[in-house]
Image (cartoon, rainbow, N blue to C red):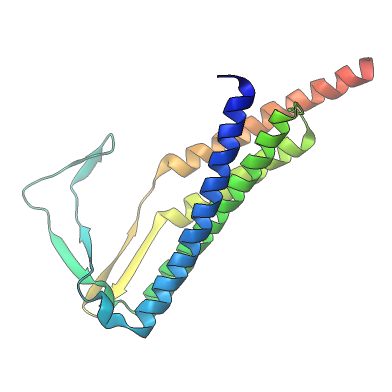
Length: 186
């Protein structure tokens, strides 16, 4: 495969993911409104929270004493519903912005304008967006009429992606500096 073919595939994937994120955005709004209007439609949908002993390399090590509590989505409290809806919408919007910035970088790569200042700014924006997504992904908060759960979970994926994009921003910044020096030499 040539470089342009890979870049075209990446651009197409970015467009598909942007459309999917918009669809997820509106699906979450629709389900939130639907739960408020007709909670009886969600009586059979359970949200389970398990107390796990520990995790090792993303595999759950189960014991015989896992305590499981099931909550029905129809019994969710309004505060919890709105909190999770807004949290999800913010995260999806930020991921949409990340994909948009990535698409700008891919277009500049395709046009052979790799080490431009706008790419540095795009990578920094992506890093900031992913850092905010990481912060929002830490909190898990659900309250139902018969109980609920609150947990803080650290998923390092978004943090590592954020740090990686900040490193890429610095690499592109140095490349931009070398590119500008080369332009002055010529």
